Image (tube, rainbow, N blue to C red; front, side):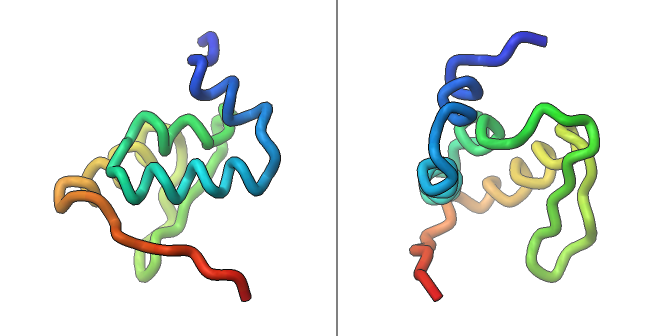
Length: 80
């Protein structure tokens, strides 16, 4: 499956840029933008705070889609 422009842009960015894109997507409840920063590997995984391990693109997308039903996530990342 060919990469979308958003996926290609995310992969060409620096790690800091990718992190910023991830948090912007959460703040905007933008599922496509959020999924664009994930790897194309079949064995990707995500663990939401307090949740189980979610494996694969379809399940990760579905998990964020369920989260976004409640709207955007108003968070601000902070350095340690």
